[in-house]
Amino acid sequence: MLAFTAAVFFLLITPGPGVLSAAGVGAGFGFRPGLTYIAGLFVGTNMVAFAVISGMAAVLEFYPVLRIALLTVSATYLLYLAAKIAFAGSKIAFIHSERPPGVLGGIVLQAFNPKAYVVNTALFTGFPFFPGDIVRETIVKLVVLNTIWIGIHLLWLGAGVGLHRLNLSQRAHFAINLAMAGAMLTVVGLAALAQR
View 1 (cartoon, rainbow, N blue to C red):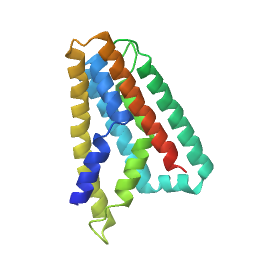
View 2 (cartoon, helix red, strand yellow):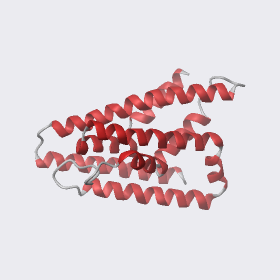
View 3 (cartoon, rainbow, N blue to C red):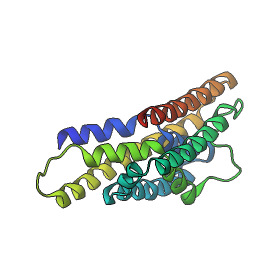
View 4 (cartoon, rainbow, N blue to C red):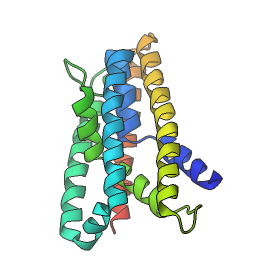
């Protein structure tokens, strides 16, 4: 179980669309709207987890055309978010919007987040620690995963709120935007490579 816990931590702490957007909402709108958005991400990530657990991910493996269609939609959406981040201008505005994305925005992001599917598939199909008791193992994995998930997303939200409070130069804001966009493009690239 220690290997599973370490894998959860390292898979979740790395930049992906969920944590990057949580930081962005924190930077752009503050802590409370960020919590609302994280609630949506939480619902969305658990929907993905249950899709993986229930075998829906296996259906996507059985029907490659459906898998490629989902990957295409996911990649397009993530490219759109990366472009908005990169071209946000000189202020930190990971997601440019007049209003924070809210719960629905978080759910939608996770539904199209290829990293969420890859991470959940790796975690729920690997790291067996209760051989012969898949139900107990799945429940424990969900508890551990969600506990670490909440902490990491709150950490990224706090980082975004902290960035907002800093009086950084326009050049620094632009560099941060480009770095975040590059991180999201890396996620898209890795997801595409994983499909080969």
